[in-house]
Length: 274
Image (cartoon, rainbow, N blue to C red; front, side):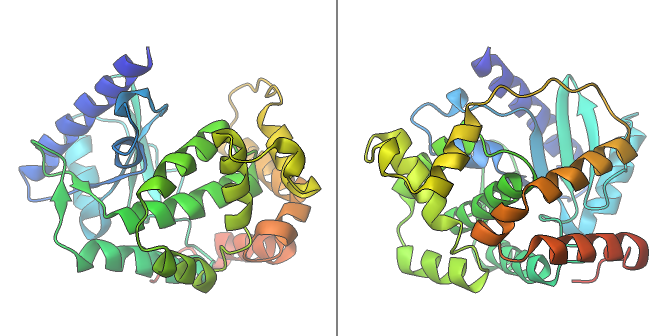
């Protein structure tokens, strides 16, 4: 089933590439296949959607989709969401949730510089960009930390790190960037959890706060009914409140500061300027 999902998602990616490439628009694949390529069997990496980044041509890319009869959901400022051939797609104009967050704006500029600064590598037979390893690794760290703070970390996050860190060569540059963007409190956690999953460390050797995160991975999630945009935002708000301690232990900012900036930006800083 997972192999079939993987191939179906890629068929949709190629279909989008064909539509956009005809108009000179190039998309970058975020996460997904860009991480899966490092797995021993790429099609065995679980992925529930397809994420692509367009950037400056995002508006025109959306127009082309709508011209093909694709119904776009525009609830989130950083992306449009749609379903194509039973595959859920997020088409990003921003790589990270930058609105109201000076820290992530700086990180966003850094990620874009990585895309602009190297010769582009494309997936075979397409114009879809496969980002450089440092881009994929740094985006992974930011995304995994965000998932930890806004909801539970998953086993997939840890297995991804088991795989990615085997391919990382320039560790000095990586550590320096993690310190610059204040991911250095999260890195020891994900490293330790990966060591446990890989069998390099016993669970009992984890410090209590790390054990707590690890234990949450294996809790059965509560089934949730579909909610409105407002309902999901309220749910996220309370999830952030519950994770206040994690912001202090592993985050790059405090929970009150994050919430204040998010609420302020929602009402008073709708236009994002990088």
